[in-house]
Image (cartoon, rainbow, N blue to C red; front, side, top):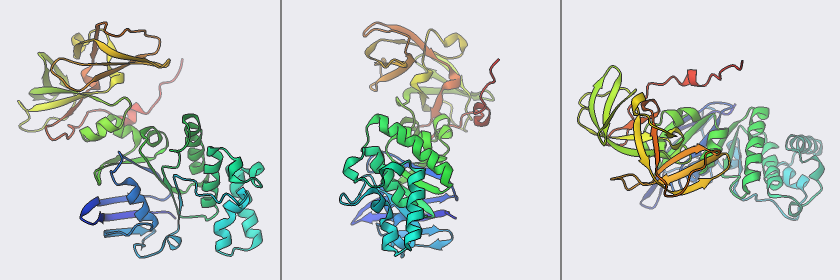
Length: 378
């Protein structure tokens, strides 16, 4: 079992409230990622679950038992830190075995559990080496092995890949995903990297200034963000935001005006919305070359001031009339564009998002279940 419930959890340091009434249920075997910018409270929340920080208010419940007053060793958790926290004078075997030695486990139990963890993590040939002889990725696997042998109900990861280079981070994301499937354990993972969140999580918890901004599966947060914060945070490059005015609402959706161009977005209208200032969001990857107004979209005249050619894709950055924020678009990498050369571009209304004056989303009319079914070949 590895069920976790957070019930109106609060954490303050002096007069500063870092975590502000967070409530969340995590089911047994789920991989949940806490993500958000620096200072949003994600690591503090994880440390409270681990018992490394005192909870100012609220309850932390693991498998139906309130654990607020229990020390970390009694909570049935194991934590993997950003720094590997390995003992440099000990071998890989002894580093992994250390928590079992502390518990005074029998020698045969230690041997069996260490060997099993080493096999899972592909460290069989490294057991007699010291941490100084290992790569960063191998050291992190040793730290994970030390957690595995404790057979915890819940694994906690605090930005475990941030010290690795880009290639190793990608490899370790795959390793952790495989490990989760193999162990079937509950895992809670903290990161500021949305790519890690999108690729590994069953559900993502987006935190902003101590509050939960949204909880849901990765693609739900991408396609149906509930507010401008989540819309901007999930997706790379970030979503573009354009000021528009509502000119009408009907069964088809909400009609808006953008600099004299009208388009109807398939979103759920609200009473009294007509005439209100709104924000239209469009992801850079949904902007394409060529006109779109005839197909119910918006035409744009864009002059990129910076162009990034990454091979797989080409990213352009421009300014739009009357707008301070940079407008970004993503094209296939085979498309060569030049700095300061105007382009005719556009996007479709069906790809747009609409937010009210408070930054809250009007619900998009899209079927996420249908979008998840891949088309057959042939």
